[in-house]
Structure formats: C-alpha cells, structure tokens
Length: 107
Image (cartoon, rainbow, N blue to C red; front, top):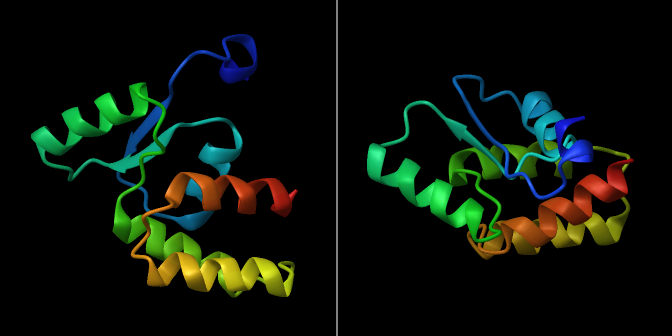
C-alpha cells in the first residue's frame, strides 16, 4: 500500500523472521529487500546503500531458501524451474532479475 502511494520509496524489511512466505509477501508488496536482524553493522549500511542504488537486498541464505521453496512449487512451468537451477548455480548473483520474474509469474 505504501509503495503504491509513494512509488519512489525504498522499503527494506529488517526482521527476525526467515519464513519464505513472509519474504514473498514482503517482496510482493514492493519491499526492496528483506534483511535479518543478525546482520553485521557494516553489512547493514551496505545493504541500505545498495537498495538506494536500486539493488534487491536479500542475504544469500534467505535467497537460497526462497529458491528451494519456489523450485519445488508445482505451479511453476519447466522453464521457470530451469531458471531457478541456473540461478542456484550462479551463486545467487542475479537475484533481483530472477526473483521479480518469479514473483510476477507466481500471480
């Protein structure tokens, strides 16, 4: 809702919840990132700066968990599953592009 009113706003979720459903929901509502509270201070500053520059912020452990959850979902077409496998092999480098493609296709 906030993102709809202010599309230029950058929203980072800082939480203790590492549940895949929460991550998907936050990203669907327009969050630019989902960060766990155990993040180191310098990493948090970098995450904020990167989000400001337009990057998607998601720790690799959460990204891996999200990809595994989405790849086992029978709703996805074979090409989407292939993208997920490539995504995993590339060590989650293309996070922003692939996650948004999957979230858009999920709906």
